[in-house]
Length: 264
Image (cartoon, rainbow, N blue to C red; front, side):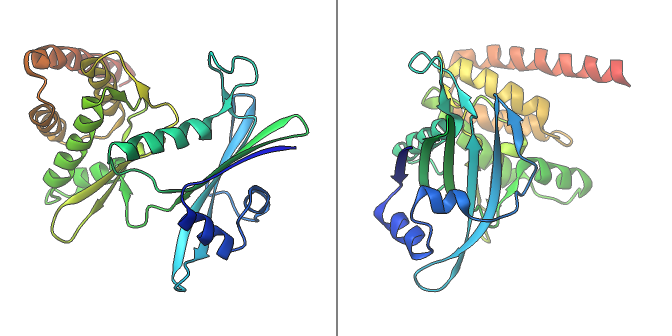
């Protein structure tokens, strides 16, 4: 049996060890209920368990334990056996951290090869107090007094920030954008589901791809999409390519409307 274990820091290692979870085996064998049905694809499965541990000061801390088996992606470096998708996600979390971009907070990543199967674990802190953007936009569509401005501006700023680095999220849906509103009215934004994130050809191309996906899949109420796009463009500084981005997104909007009319 071959095992790889990466603790995100010595503090995280001490925390997990303090709770009797200082090894791959202890985390894999921990009993818990999947918070949603495991995803069976790529020739394997992947699932998420919510668990509560205790900090050294006695305070509780919720963590997410993501488990998968034979759930891999193939690349030039690993064309046959592939690499666990959670490893790709962990590397992308580390990548965003290097650019000081707020993201998920990992504690541990590990993988092992046992009985011909590849198992992988990614342990992260639960995003306590956060809601996904889809739920927020849906509520705003029902409550006309809901103030979306700070949320829209914060999400637009985060998107513009990763795109300025030529990073494409590649699955930028509202359910993958988590927001926590503070008492002072500001909003903290975290992008999740980073396993497909990669570098794009140009800042413009990653923007066109991600924003197109975000428009099509999120339930934007009223003129909130226009407000978001204007906020994004103000922060992104795309200059001469601004009109071209508008044109591409307008075409995507038109296609979505035609589909709605056909299904109506």
